[in-house]
Image (cartoon, rainbow, N blue to C red; front, side, top):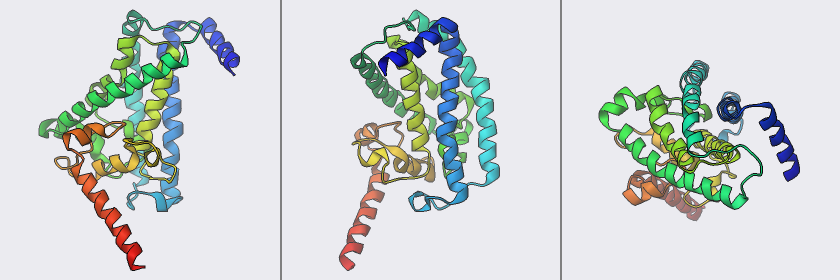
Length: 269
């Protein structure tokens, strides 16, 4: 398996320049993973499949879903792609590599763990700032147009927010200058995480059921349902920042009430 991956990588680095791989390749991977993981939730909602796992009973209209997709394409080609192109010199300067051999799995996992921790910290504070009155009204309210989120709404945001919170995602790799493979793995994991957090479904197999401190869809869906001044749950991937600063109290109280209702219901039966 390792030799197959290395053979494929050798083909890429001999047929495409570092610039093409780092910018256009990254953009292609992002778009592929984002839309392939996010679009199914639109069809789940429209068809009513797996409805018992849907967090909110309200559905989005077809028009609002289409509006989201069109805006996303505009934002991705008009904001994301230019940022990737402009960021290339920074990543090269910080030591990003494309050549073989690949870094060890220890190095890859250590770097990605660092990226998650750093991204969580920066995203939390950036997200809280976006919930101040002026910034929410003029910037962050775009993302909250969808009180009932679905996978693709994860990246539906004002261009200024895309740049502001996107910084949290790229600062880790910019600091460490990783191998391009590590950067792609980080990007894939981050996209899958944010799509899952906005998917609107809480499944028995959802990561939040198994991974301590992982937020997931139920945690973030609460954030979208409430008024901006009272929502809390500002964290990105993991929930410890909200726990430390007490911005998840409303969500925890709601969970305690739900758990209490289940227990009482069980006793009555």
